[in-house]
Structure formats: C-alpha cells, structure tokens
Length: 262
Image (cartoon, rainbow, N blue to C red; front, side):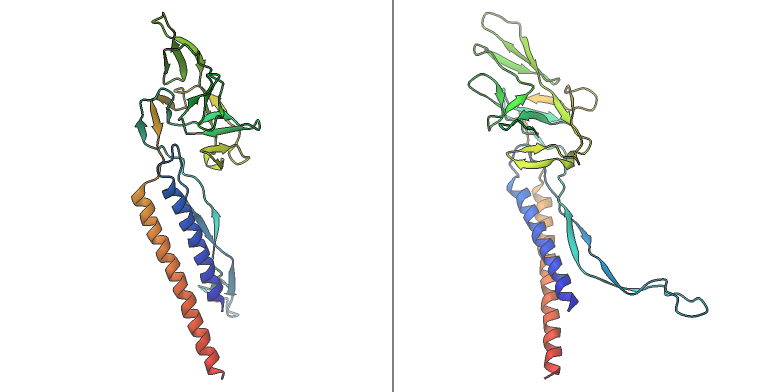
C-alpha cells in the first residue's frame, strides 16, 4: 500500500527535523553558533488523471486531475546567520562582531577557516589564537611586556608599554564577507570553510561599509531562541506521531483486506 511508504518518508523527515532542533538546543550556549533549519520538499507525483485532459470530442477538459504524492524529502539544513546577542565579559582578548563578517584563522593543515567566535587567547609567542590554538589572520603578536591592550571598533590593535602612557598600534584585524554565508561548510570547533556555494571571501576593515564593527570585551552568543526551538520540537513530534498513525491505519486496512480473502 502506497500510504505505508508515504508515511514512512514523513517519519524519516521529522526524525531529521528533531535532530536539527536538538543540535540547536545543545548549542544554545555556544559562542557564535548559528542555528539551522530543516527544509523539505514533496516527492514525485503519480498522475492517475492529468488535469486538463480532454474528456470529450467537444473539447471538454478535466478541471482537476488525480495526483498521488509519494511523500517528502529533506533538501537542506541551512544556517540562519542572524546576529546573536552580545554579552560583556570584560576580557581583553574577547572580541565580538556586531554586524557582518567573520574572523579568519589559519588551520594546522594550511587551510583558512572562518569563525564568529571571538574568544581568543595568546600563545607562547604572544600571538592571538583561537581556543584550539589556530592563529588569527592577519597575525597579531603582542609584546610580552605590554601592560594593556586595546582593540577599537575598526580592528586596530594597540598596546601600552612600560614607561609610556601613549598606546602604540601593533596590528590590524580584518573581517571576511561572503555573498552567500549560508553556503559555508561547518566543520566543528565553531569554524566554517569556504565552498563553491559561499563564494570567495572579501576581506576588509571592520566598521567600514558592509563590514561589522568589533566590540572588545564582549562575545556573541548563539542566535538560538529556546521558546522557538521548543515549539518547533513539539510540532515535529506531533507530525511524527500523525505519520505513525497513518502507518497504523494503513496496516489495519491491509489486515482487514487480507481477512476478507480467507
């Protein structure tokens, strides 16, 4: 019976939907995390009677046909790259992006990755790195005897040295833009990779046209809304249950039919 297969595709789709929602909820406290959304499309139709088919020699046509659908399929789980809430931490090396753009970091294998997670640290050489030790690009190295560090909205990094009250600029942070940021490939560790779908990165100075500004001592929280995720979870659960009910009903109908043949 066709209904069994159709309802099974609905159950599999909602199972994936719940998996996406659960990942969103699990990352509610992940810095710079961008929530995902499952998107679906209907499958092919069997046209038992095609709409518009001529039904008589006088030219009468069917105003409505008979189309039997075969279920649903998942077509994507795009990330929604909306701005997350900024939370003040007071830490000098915590930097949040308010607006568009990604930090660029160098991976150990030589690849370039991108992130919205600005919870940076210093390594043994005084370089600005991510929590995994990946060097932020372009490289920023702070003097070991620096007494304070300041990062303004334009990404200019300045330090104050002993015996001086005047900050000295030692580097410039940049941001990267993508024409289709939802096309970036997530690889974990709050990192994304460029793909053919994302387009090539356009590097620029923060707080200029099209680029967000930097906020030192702040971090961007995940853009996950608990109430929205819970309501989506309930809706997915109910849709799963209804598809399971269809399978039960179809099974009962098949059982009744087989009993008639005994």
